[in-house]
Image (cartoon, rainbow, N blue to C red; front, side):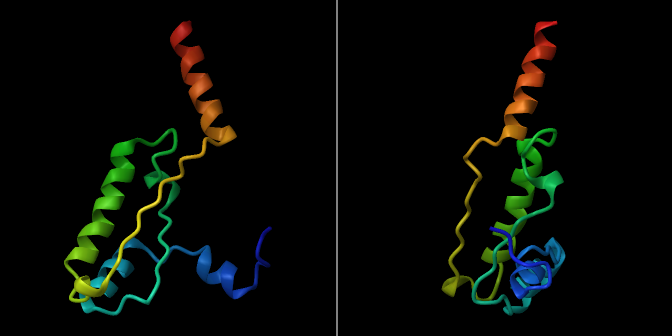
Amino acid sequence: MTAPANSSLAKKGLSFLGLQAFADAATSGTLPNVSYIIGPMELSEHPPWTPHDGGWFQQQIVNAVINSPTYNSTVLFISYDETVSVKSLSAIQQSDDDNLA
């Protein structure tokens, strides 16, 4: 199910204000009660990008939280997309085919 394009969920839930905005809010102690962070695709660890890219992004989030004045009352959950998508399988298959040539 998809949220209507003009709904609050679509506007706020599917937007990325940027890593700097999150870090600034953490530094000032003004993070909202709940933040869902979905980074840009190029920092997702999905092909063609690397785990190094996603790891860098995750480290920036962790650093911002642990250096926040509200750290002692903050919980951070990191969830990975552990299901394999058709796109990921296609990239793996293409890579395997390239190695066979």
